[in-house]
Image (cartoon, rainbow, N blue to C red):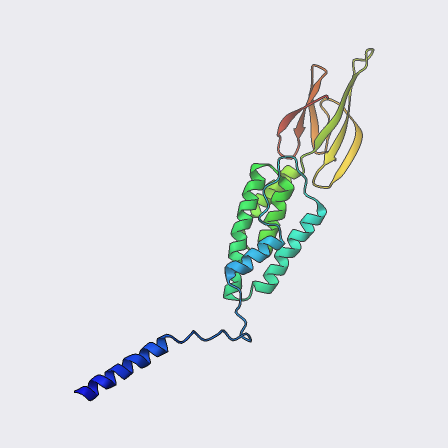
Length: 217
């Protein structure tokens, strides 16, 4: 009986001694791959996909557009062939969803198009933003008028409108354009509907029929 008790005591001491041993140190030669979340956060940071939505009227720079597209394309090439990589791209895609939503809310049509294309780069063949991109392109093609002058000839009564026309989609400005009420201008995608009290004009966007007022400032 005494021998059994001694044996049990020895075993308990051995178990306790084993429990006091420190855990084995990690092998420095073993590389632990990043998690999908970590990969996604790197892509989001590199592509500036987490920046706040710009205010209305902000224009997209060529440099930023090129960088965002390059980041999205590179991310797909690097991570699009593994399950973990695809999971990371799904996380990035959800962040891009937020960017599209914010750009739509602030009517930043060039940003909308950019993020739609970034999504397409991450998800080739996805129809998710096909319609959104097409509608944004239509809005971006709408001309922007500024530096309005309204000149009425006293003798003939003919009213001539002088205005600068920005074509945002093409990034081109037509300066000092001469327009007349009732005429359509397909190259500018607009029609002059009316002059309002000699202080403003009502114009129509030919591609959608939308009308708006441009005031003289």
